[in-house]
Amino acid sequence: MGVSTLLLTSGCGQLLVFHPAGPVGQSELQLIWLQIALTAVVIIPVLILLAIIVIRYRDRPGSKAVYRPDWSENRTLEIIWWVIPIIIVGILGTVTAKKTFALTQPPKNPSNPTVVQPLTIEVTSMDWKWLFQYPNQQIATVNYCVIPTNRPVQFMLTSNGPMNAFWVPQLGGMEYTMPGMIMRLWLQADKPGIYYGHGGNFTGQGFAQMQFNVQAESEQQFNAWVASIANNSPQLTQGEYDKMAQPSILGQMSFSSFPPNAFENVVMSEGGKYMKHDQVMMNSISSK
Image 1 (cartoon, rainbow, N blue to C red):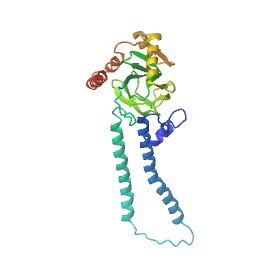
Image 2 (image 1 turned 180 degrees about the vertical axis):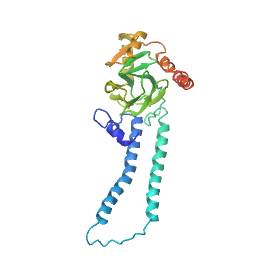
Image 3 (image 1 turned 60 degrees about the horizontal axis):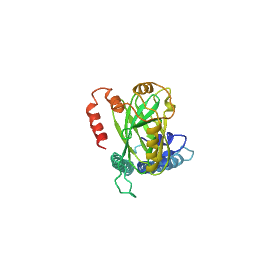
Image 4 (image 1 turned 90 degrees about the horizontal axis):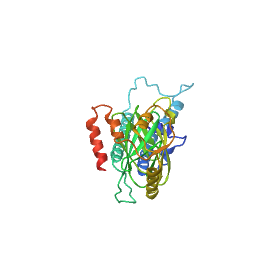
């Protein structure tokens, strides 16, 4: 994704990507600043040279510029404007690839080298809402989720409707949700707060309402919240799930349970061509 796209679509009219609240967001912000710096290396000299050329070589009375109709090349200039872009692309490509592959693993906290058990959340995008299922806690929420701070969170993403994109700008980059596929996104919040999230792919009339909040709390508060939802919220039945999957706009909701294998059934219902890939991902979930 280009820098301009990030700047123009950061959510809520603020440049949220420039205020990261976790290691993934910080890593991606470093990449954004690198892109800006390398772009400036090209743009600033070009703009300066443009002004110089326009002023110096403009057609004006009494011009004493040498007339050279047979001039065709300048080896020095050609070397400069080929070598510099090659170097820039090489640097940007190397750093981007390195950071991208690093972000496919659980985030690491340099100040706390202790291995922390990741939290898995299964996310399903629908028209026009987000369903969050906690397979280990056996609870579910709609249009919001709660995560513990300083703990890696593994978001497993799919879609029960059109393709969309899951994005929490302050925590990290977006990842697509696609029917019949499971995509993985690692995020982590280093401090408590409520972080804005939104769908990143246009999906029709209710797209503007596909907003959600990620609420980060301490581990103790998170466990208390899980217990509260499990004890006080209604169950999500299969009939209610099927109704929710229809195009509609909902507010925030909580459920003390959800239909067995609801997430897996959505993935598998899209056909067998992705079955091998999905089975590998589901095995990965169950092993966490």
